[in-house]
Amino acid sequence: MKTIAANELKTKGVSSIEKALEEDAEAMISVRGQERYVVMDKEEYNRLRVCELEAALYETRQQIAVGEFTEESVEDHISRIRKTAK
Image 1: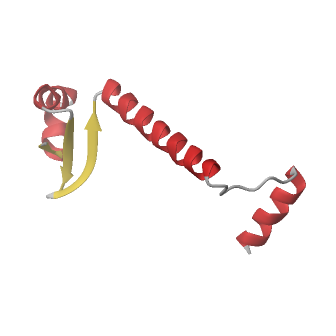
Image 2: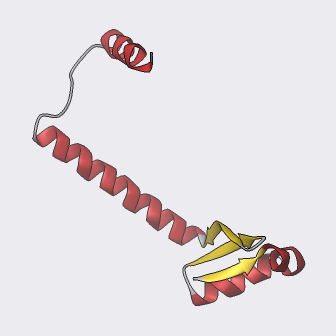
């Protein structure tokens, strides 16, 4: 993954990100030598979001399959959440 210094980003702007993304799917932005941010193409971001949602759906289906869920009214659910938050 290519690293772009914040100063390069200031001077060259978005073109430095575009160049970095030609070589890799993501690029790191460093600030004062510390890696702080990751930038990526919107299509890559959307692909990762879909993967994240599919993983959550898979996990939910697994929990339902083994009975790890609660059926309750809205009022009971809110009450349980409030008790947990205390």
